[in-house]
Length: 465
Ligand code: OOG
Ligand code: NI
Image (cartoon, helix red, strand yellow):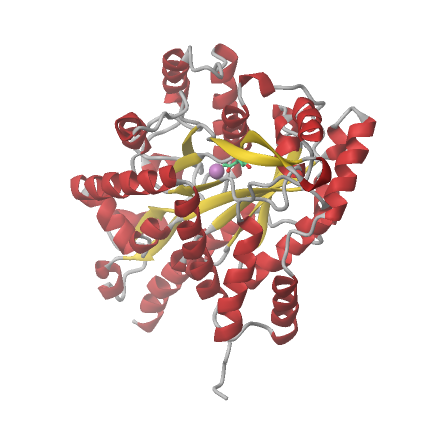
């Protein structure tokens, strides 16, 4: 036997992400169209912006972009969530962050499974926004019990997927053959099923309670509901979507267009109306339709510090207090104008943001810095002297207000419902089986590590003099 017979978790994730992309392209042809559009716009953007290209190359993050995507699933039970955590762990994906969407009228709370190490992110940053249905927010008790009973009967993982997860946990990884089987078996969980496990009548009742509940409860598994490529110019993709026969939602979620992008901007196209069959009496099938799967694109910017995030949240609330974006898009232009206006208060220059402590940056020695033995300099002097450069650390997570906007645009205007805001991170973590990671601690750690390497070398050069 060779020393390490195990396939690296990063490679399993990469293969899984590619397999999922191929499956989704088959299932939802518009996804393929969107991928081609994004690839074309990214190539144009890089050709027109050599500074951006150089930055992505210098930070080793150019290659990941064409492979980069995130998906989303909605789970029904705590047991499904905790098993899903174990499945993602085999692919080197950990739960980061807690998102409460009840405030936005969507009865779920969520986390994002993703790689956390810098090298793993560069290798393949595949993430899955994973929601757990909150039946506790459904008022109708009889319906709640009926839904729970249906969920209790389904098994969303194949026996072999479960066995392989147990094996990976026991042995500390999977060999080549098992890794290949693992990818195939786990893919089954994300597949679309056009035969519902409930009757048309029950589907109707679930749907009336909330469309999202019908989507989670009615099927054999948590079909992947979108897969999102990353673009370097979301405004351009948004503008070109109609030419490709795709109608985008009216408003891009997140911050406005900026020279120096922050956090995350997202837009999506509406969920498709898809033919499904409901379980009829005596094993017959009754034709119907369901909307769940949609398309989305995203543009990622710099990760913000708690101070930067507080400013972002404040400016977003201010904007939404001025103009509430209507679901039908009728006041989109007005909203965008207000957003741009209010966000003038957020510095739009990398160095200004860095100096104000609004964003996270990674520091590295320039060629001149590496050659500058004998220079003693503090950070700011070293930057000014061109010994150390800084680059924005990309935001790898999600935004609850944006996620709510994406959910809602796909659920339809009529789906907005009021729930009492009831974040319950403790309950979520109990169901998950572990605590979620804190995103801010993660970015701060990357920044600190980069800084330490630079300053050690500069100072060592001084000491060696
Ligand atoms: C998830 C919506 C959230 C995002 O990018 O913010 C999301 C869902 O619809 O299940 O994917
Ligand atoms: Ni998404």
